[in-house]
Image (cartoon, rainbow, N blue to C red; front, side, top):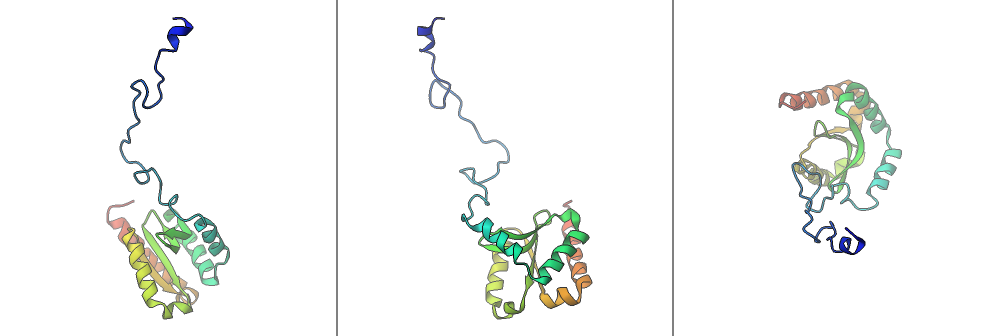
Length: 158
C-alpha cells in the first residue's frame, strides 16, 4: 500500500469509520456524566473540611483518638462532607455517622433534626453525643458505638 492509499483509510476516532463507542458496563462510579459525589461538591468544600479538622474541639480530639483506638477496622474519617453538611465522624464501611453536640446545639434542635434526616437519606445512621458525655463518660460512649457497629455486622455486612 502506498502513501496515497493510506490516506483513504478511515480514522479510528469515534464517529469516523465505524469505530466502536465505549459502553459503560457493570457497576460504574458516579452519575450519568461520570462525576462522583465528591466531584460535584462546591470548590471550597475540601478546604473548609480541612479547616474544621484543624480547629477541632477537645471533645472532638478525644473522640477521634477513641475511635481510632477502639475501632481501627471501621476506618473513621473526620469532618466528612455528606450532602450539604459536614459529619463530625464517619465510617463509610459501617455507614455510621457520629455527631458531637456542643453547648450551642441545644438551641438548634430543628437544624440538627434536618441535618440528621438528610444524612440518613444518604444511607447513614446518625448517633449523637453531647460534649459532656464524651468528657465525663468516654467508656459509655464507646460502648454505645460498639452496639451500633455490632448491629451493622449482624445485618450480614463485614
